[in-house]
Length: 208
Image (tube, rainbow, N blue to C red; front, side):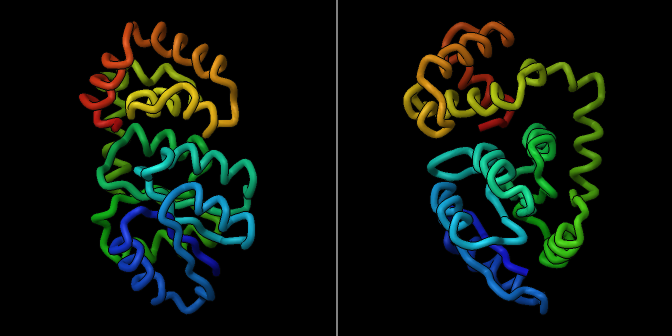
């Protein structure tokens, strides 16, 4: 089993490496400090599993996930997050992730998740499954961002993080004009007028 760890914190990567080395079937563990580096490494080596952080300095983890599943669909992706954000978990699974764990997960559960994913299964923790179930309850399901498509959701996160139309277009390999069209659609669907409104919404809903 070959595993690639993508996280911008060296101490996190080292901790994950130490845990994963307990698996006898692991033959290679490589590291990437951002999404761009991870994609470059994946071009050179075929990995069975990618442990991918949601919050990366250069691009959102969901965008990296989508690129990985498009170019290397056989690579299973286990998403990692600092917080049990149900919105991200649902989107990640929709985009093809094989699992979703929070960074405070016990080492035994991480190993269990990797084993299950390597066998072709999917994994989320019981606590996160319960949170998702509550999130899907009609009391909480009516949040504005739920009506956005996956691409609209990704662009919303990028805009909320202060990235320009040019930066977003470059990352997604689309034109500035297309990004602007997406922005207008997002604003219309969510009933917002300015990027600052969008940023405030994302902060209040723990999306950024």
